[in-house]
Amino acid sequence: MSLTLLTSTYRLRSLSRLQRIQGHMMSSHVEPEVLLEKVGRAGVITMNRPKVLNALNLSMIRQISPQLKKWENDTETDIIIIKGVGGKAFCAGGDIRAVTEAGKLGDSLAQDFFREEYILNNAIGTCRKPYIALIDGITMGGGVGLSVHGRFRVATEKTLFAMPETAIGLFPDVGGGHFLPRLRGKLGLFLALTGFRLKGRDVQRAGVATHFVESKKIPDLERELVELKSSSAENVSRVLDSYQNQSTLDSEKPFVLHQHMSDIDRLFSSSSVEGILQNLKADGSEFSKKQAEILSKMSPTSLKITYKQLQAGASLSLQDVLVMEYRLSQACMRGRDFYEGVRAVLVDRDQNPKWNPSTLEEVSDQSVDQCFSSLGEKDLTF
Image (cartoon, rainbow, N blue to C red; front, side):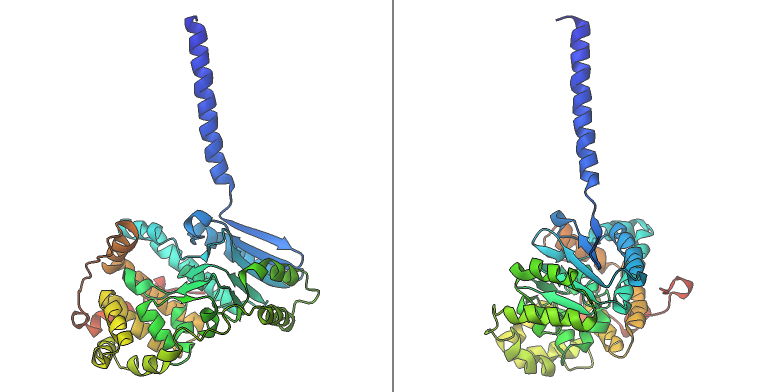
């Protein structure tokens, strides 16, 4: 074979390899992270990052926010539906690793992400049209913010709800300070401090979801909602109720925390996190021991911030809660525990964070109060 032929063959192979690589790169970019479609008189938002459990990133927020406003003001759109693809998750949370990297570098993403996410949470909470979140699968952190403030939240047997932020040196944000203290008794404070996971029907029983529908019925439910001739909140409610009535799965099982509710109300009624821990240790039941053990692994700073956040949030509007939470998010970005928590839980996965300060007693009231102080012109505004 001549040198020229060899060279041209090599070039062709290189070219086709380059084209394959480019083609692959193109195809990996072609798949949008969020789908925004008009189906009949419904606006449908679909989180489309199944490989990362539909984790929410800034570019998704920037696509959803203007579209939500557009549909809210559009006379041709009656309802808004939000869902996730992949069968495992609605949305497992915010893209925390990207935020961590940005925070370490002092990049503006650490401000922009929380600011724009909270503005979206507020837009969902104030949306004038029926907003229906189909929370079929894992729904944590940022996924809770995309669903819980809307008028309707439909859980299935696949739903797994949690606000596990105290384990990574954060706090239950995205409006957690608004909805958690409004759950019955001390349930919200318990969920916020411990990161306890609720599954399936229990998500509705806790008051986080408004309805429970079996996962296999969700496509039919969505079809019926989209085909509604008159999509008033009453009509949407009627359709959701009818699907809930057809779903008997796990209906005979009691609420997972049923036998512990009075204990939770009693043990978590204290004027401080230290007091709660003392109550748990003094109680001595298996349940109390387990909760004390869980709390001992959480960031002491996060526990104290979270306690104060829920105490304050109980009497604030969603908008005021989000202003407060933005201040807290930036305090966490300036602190140490968030980066250490993400390292231990999500990066190295050694599950052994070294918190600083390492005990509740070392976290002063003054340092907690500072986290809540105004950021002046950098405060969140709507």
